[in-house]
Image (cartoon, rainbow, N blue to C red; front, side, top):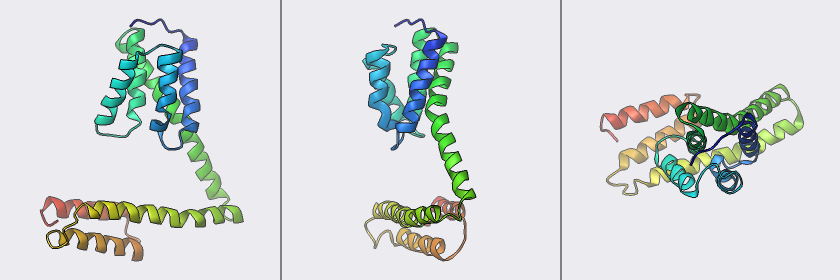
Length: 190
């Protein structure tokens, strides 16, 4: 497949991905059907096989799920000319999907910090705290439940309990606890 993309086409790709960035509440993966409609159906910059194989490859690779966006841009660039345009396509797609949501999050966090004395901001933070704690507990439970044989894996359960108590009762940074858990695992203690 050979394409001839103009500056307007590259700007349209950036603009479309930028708008998806603000709509992809569950992450970039939730916008994949719209990306498919745009890239394959409307613009015909990718074939269906290129899109699906690129998506599958990116999801199979280690790293963040958003990497499939870079691969879509890369494939559009390859179809438009070669290595240099592939780099351009990857950059345009990733900037489009990351820049707006990052700026919005950064701005909202700064605004919330500056206005932390407002009743509505305090109420929002207080309402979010139990949700965040519940999600952390659920994640910890799921990760710990992978070792369901208590008699055989009692050390894992003990480590989970100790880490939970340390997070709850101290101000030790989580990265120190993760490092300690990794060290205990590397030494074969858990």
